[in-house]
Image (cartoon, rainbow, N blue to C red; front, side, top):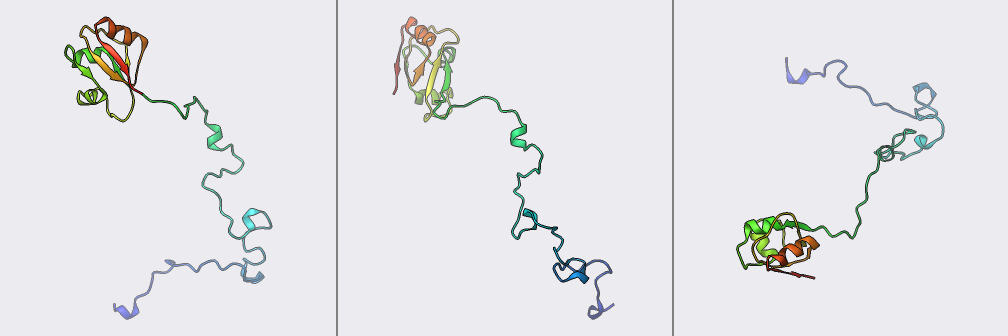
Length: 148
């Protein structure tokens, strides 16, 4: 065996289909595209989401719910979390809540909710608080200041 007489194995390569080369070629006249319609035109390409006559996936799947575009997404902290993490008379800001790992980001607004009991007096500066949370904080001798 020498390099100058190597050959490809039989059947390993095929000649490409030469269309539009007359009736004798077997691929003349319409060049395998049939007659008329979008598929017969040059440059035609199915879009990836095309499903023929079948009801498209985006229309088959049920739609549920609605999320308003201008919705404010609050980071929630409960009264019981404040009681667990903070001592008597502390002033609590979003920065302090972040240090205690009660919120993930100081860039998102914070809302205090009223789950649990509070026995310590705390001064809070937050973006929002529920009515029950405010009642519990003021009953314990604290105050809530709403940030804009």
